Image 1 (cartoon, helix red, strand yellow):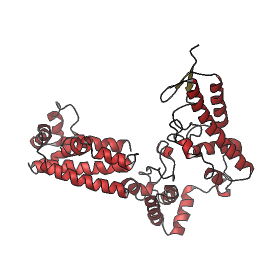
Image 2: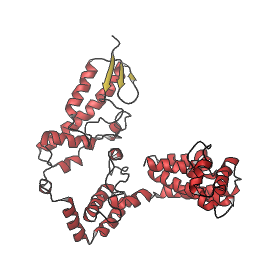
Image 3: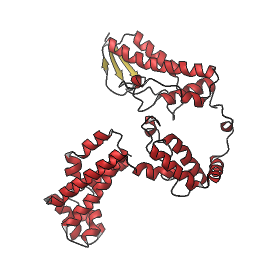
Image 4: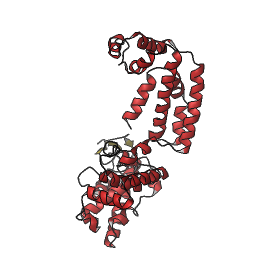
Length: 360
């Protein structure tokens, strides 16, 4: 009577999750059929599993039709290429969804994306083998990596080239070389510990990769996470100069001096815990200040510590935030970044840096 439609995960305000790399087989064509069946019911209110509800029969039909159409187009293109004898590699890099379709707010490729759906379609109709002889019964990764590294002149050569490719934005190819290096020398340069980096942008890699464990770029993880674009470097430099001037001219407030005073008055690091029990938060900031407070009483040292932590936090923000350059810059030059976090020498700057790193 009310004509409400509860769609579950068939509608998630992102590209349909019909090719999830970490899930069992999904069925893109049947997914589209289900959406068409929903349209036929004539719902007037659509309530998805994720995102905002949609009201209006025509609007709902338009949204469901667009999602179904995108999936149907992928299935049609993939099957046509498979029947023509094309390889999975060729299909993956050929079949696309038009950019204007992906630009729609309910088809953004931020969780799943067309390339993953294409793989699922191939797996459904063609099996798990992609047709390459070397991937039917492959050699162990470690053996392959060792051989490639030997031909290249060592794992360090592969790492260097992967770094160069990452700097140039070719993160797909960089991932291949990084994997070869890690397989060849898994215990060198922390290859197994830092195996994740942010892969995306420029059409080179999937935006959804950040959601699915991120691609392995172990040897270049340091560079991949630390390097900034020219625009970001300029933003960081200008912001750092501005903050340095503001810090120099800033007279510390009472709550800034309180943390410094506690650090100076405490004989041992573990003594900070009872001395900060009324502060309302763990003594992380005081612990960082404590060794410096044992050497000098100058408040300038307090400000210098906050400034350095702020520089690192700003660097990581620019490197890790998945926003347009101008948006990151706009946030940086706002009050919280410039004043509340960095100029005022309080634990907010440390908390912010840890927050950025924890979600990276």
